[in-house]
Length: 368
Ligand code: MRU
Image (cartoon, rainbow, N blue to C red; front, top):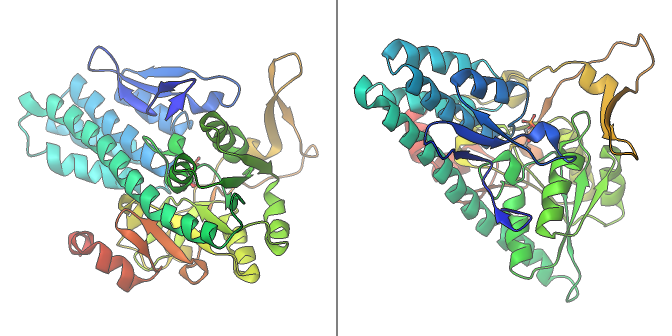
């Protein structure tokens, strides 16, 4: 997508052909800065501290992390060590494991002398694949938006609520939940997006609002608690979120607070869609609530907030009564029964085992 008229991906190879550039997402929305990753440790650090985040981008960064490790030492031992270290960085998004398993299986078959080039080619392939998948998700999701637009008065916008950031910043480009939104907007379908601020890290207010604004998509940031009220009053036509891991049965793990939106949508008869690339499906799991590991993050994300003062300085301040304990589970699981449909690169699927397996038979075979 474009930033100030210049096309960007979220991750790309530097001019030296070996180091890797990323957009530092910890600086949003106050600054647009890039960071150079020179080693596997830099890549692991970028994932851990959320300079990069979002399930697909975490997978792509891990693939480049392996390439950086191979650049330093292309031995079998180094390959295994890199995959193990990178896997430790964040627990919930399954794209990380998917990318690393694939990297390990592909690269172990390549002789060490040729492994570095093969690893960079593999990482580039993961990135291109992500973009292709997201564009297909965009086309499939746009059909849903177009269908709702047909039932509205001409020019009246389709109101879409989204949670967290499943935008282009969470992927290599286009985003998952945002791909149908960008494509609709680009094709002249009027859309308006309700952006949940998404406490505690504010991915909605900081990232989704920033990227929609840069693309010229009409949007409004709301407090996380406002969605149910808007749905009750007919101001939300559909919800589209992303996901960090979806089970073979269609249970969806996503940023904390998604489940509450699904409950409200269900109560109000608002369709609740989840946009996902197939690498986000974990075919080994059947029960999301019990089986998906939920990342518990530092309490300071809840007890403190960062913002910009009127004179332009960035400050972090405390917002919780002194001495009160805080907890910070970062994801929750929405059961398949609350999901209207899964918008994938192979079409819009019902959230159940049969529909998912039918669309991705080769992935079912691989996980068996
Ligand atoms: O903790 P984050 O910022 O890495 O959270 C991930 C997300 O952005 C989402 O939950 C997203 O909706 C799914 S990834 C496209």
